[in-house]
Length: 388
Image (cartoon, rainbow, N blue to C red):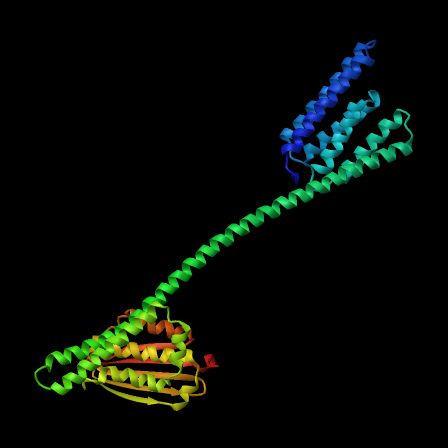
């Protein structure tokens, strides 16, 4: 099992303390065993063996593995023997370092090795005629200090992990914010483009139709031409208003003004844009209780009709539009049919895509049908559940 604190500074500090402890033992041997050089050399070799074994364990063996445990037991036996034979600061420090390695260096403290360490420590001091009560007191204090140090290291490690997770979360939040901003800008660009297409496309189509009529009839019907030109002028002014409103992102005031008019009145105003030239006719069959639905549904219906008329005149040269708007207990149905040029395949332009997006946003469905010879139909159903 890997150490939860890693190796790093702690292991390096342990190595320095071990070397210092062994050098301290050498100093004691030179002083106290001057008359017995054989024993001094034996104990010095023993201390070097202990140091080499500890270095190999920290360098090459996995913490708390089988070989690591065997090496640790060997170090405890050697350290205990030195503590018995050479009782000094160095040997005491070395036995404490082994306890630090066992408690701090492992994720889960191996209890058998801890008991072995305590037994060897107690036996070494008892062999030197130290009272048991002092041995127990010394070991308890030593264990408490090391265990508190372990807890401090655990909290430090947890803090580091939490800080790393916090940094990752902050980075993810920044990336998410950038993504949301980009999506928001993209959505706004799409919305503005759709509004420009729907509003200005409608007015420009109507204006083009009026000017075309005026161009053809300029020498025939003066009064009619005057009426058409006046209507064209009015359409151009309304087109500028719509452009200004689209640029201002269709502010709340604009929506309030729209809501003041009934859907029927809005549709009739829409029809009037194309009726001045007398070439386009409209038939409207609408349930009166449609006016009771919320503004989002009525706005969707209005813009769907607006785009259908614009497309029908612009692409199909339609002269007759029949609209049926009905409300039943479960949904609102919308049917827009014209007598324009038919097509084999419906190509979804920006306008048709805009119709789909608005109706799908309300949970509805829409179909586009056309006969090969003539006619084009837009049929939509909007669930009544979105009504408030």
